[in-house]
Image 1: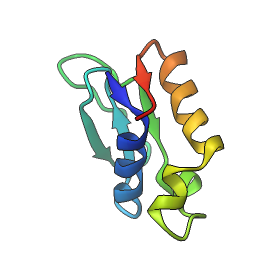
Image 2 (image 1 turned 60 degrees about the vertical axis):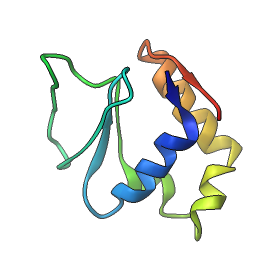
Image 3 (image 1 turned 30 degrees about the vertical axis):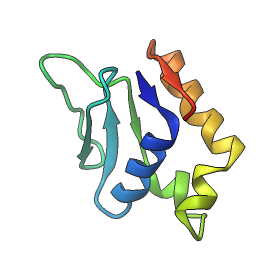
Image 4 (image 1 turned 180 degrees about the vertical axis):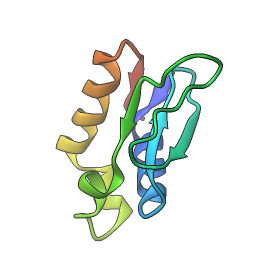
Length: 87
C-alpha cells in the first residue's frame, strides 16, 4: 500500500535531481527527465515531476497538508490501478 505523504516527501527530496517514478509495491526511483524506467519488466504506476508539484511551497509541511496536492497524488495513483491511503 502506498502512502500519500510519503510520496510527497520523496517528490520534495527529488527536486533538482529528476522525476520520481513510483511502483505499486512502494518502490521509488529518481530518474532523468524523459527517461522511461522499468523495474523487473514493469513500468511504474506514475512518474511525478517535482518542480511543478512542490516548488511553489516554501516548506515541506505546507506541501504535506495541501488538499489539492494530496488529492492529485492519490488520483494519479488510483487511476493507474494502484492503492494509496492518506497517512
